[in-house]
Image (cartoon, rainbow, N blue to C red):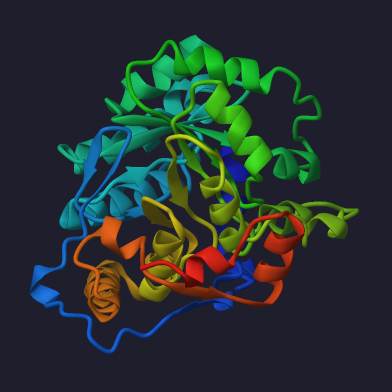
Length: 350
């Protein structure tokens, strides 16, 4: 199977496997504020990561590219969508363009249709400094995602089996590119130990890519004759991973992805400590099933509802919202308590 065929397989399987709603988001509850003292019209959704100004804390995260005309069409539509709302967009792994220059157009279309917006380039942790620079230059990108996908590679029939040297390569890229570097998991979450190592290597932004969204173990298992089903439930849920990342001392900039389907989901991960929330599978589903215009309506509702939620808590800005009191329960609380992280501090905020 060619790389481009595999890319389209990923898209089809991502749509068919759906999202599990096992992200832990149902374990998070806002403490009601009877006297919020806010006005929806005064709510600001602006946020910042790595010195980049975001008009909204919701962005379109990496999905695809390198699959010929089909993925070019998807990326064009996503770029047009990002341009409507002036929000960031990340492309899928650009290794296809590195391996085959004829696939470069499937990524460049994003800059063409989002000419002045924020774009995140994307490369795997196996990339060299030169390859990372190529990916940034190809898109005139504002930031670079380096994705980590160990479980996906292990389950992928033709995947990698050697993960040595990844941290050293990441450190070399961070010190050699002229844009912020985001290290991103693809759906299995990050522990605080991983985040600590990345910060020590000079990384300033992590995208925890938690378990509970698009499941690349299931996607790759659907392509196997002998599925490794034990990896289907492998990973750290999104809520747990955000809190683990936020527990690491020092300056923390966190992107939260993994099962973000609604404004309420985005609100919860932001209140837990994320600077922004990425949507991928849900946006792709809307685009493929409801069409472009209806997807615009869906996202408009997400932004409107996020303002409503913030107003209900008494928060006028993202920083204020991150001090809203929360109750954490269920499996999320049990996990964090076992890891020595005090969940009560969230209830006592504000």
